[in-house]
Amino acid sequence: MKFRTKKIEQADVNITPLIDIVFILLIFFMVSTTFKQEFEVGLELPEARSDSTIQDKSIEITINSNGEFFVNRKQLVNTQVVTIKRALEKIAGDTRDFPIIISADSSATHQSVITAMDAARQLGFSKLNFSTQQTSDQ
Image (tube, rainbow, N blue to C red; front, side, top):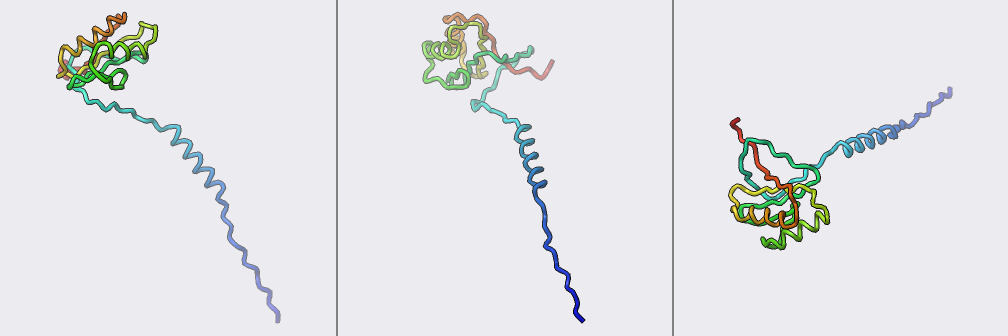
């Protein structure tokens, strides 16, 4: 008697849907990820009861505890008024409507803050603000 043997079929796994799902997840995570940009100069801001908010189109002058100046997070080569004025002119151009936000460390000297204010006033900026942190007791 002659028996017929059944041919064994190879199992075939279609991975195309799996690849589609992985790409969709990859795109979802890429789009939904936010990147936090941190500023490396550590400041301990003075306290105030009012809340100070930074506007989108503003120029920030940062003064750390050593008296070093940063304009929009870029360190200046020295602390002279001329250098601060050049940095402000480079950012603002001919426009003097930008608010200037001075963020000075609480242990920075008063002279450093006055130097930043003087440079801004000499160029004609009239909107000067000071960045503070809110006090815990209300």
